Length: 169
Image 1 (cartoon, one colour):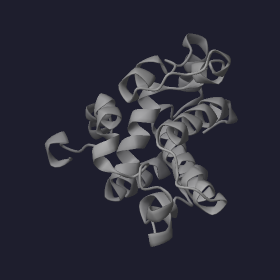
Image 2 (spheres, helix red, strand yellow):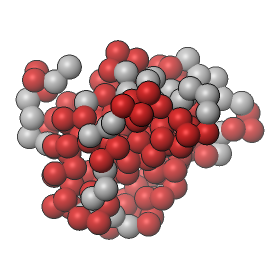
Image 3 (tube, helix red, strand yellow):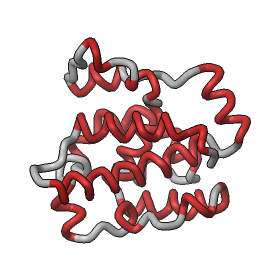
């Protein structure tokens, strides 16, 4: 993965954390951010596996947060819109799928190793969350709360991972 995905990863992570905030406390917020960033980074690596894919993303621009905001009932402030243009709806949807299902995240991480060995390593908070990780991100990992976002592009993720979408929640 190239560094050109950095704005998409940062904006998509920020959106997930705003839509599904961690409970109070700096440690909880940091652990939730680590999990969201791992999920978004893995999703972005799978979505944009080559430099050409990344260049096309920059040429055509990410989808933005409009539909995601509408689905979650979020009403952004007028001065809070610039970073939202860097949000990629598919990446956020795939990240939600990965956050809701650690087994699916492990499968995706295994597939991503073939794409980008450096960024696929070190995803233990996503693929094998400990008790503290789960406590720090109860909303961010709740399958029912994530479903309307995860369901947007789950079939494409299942197809990419060669899984039957009927086997998934």
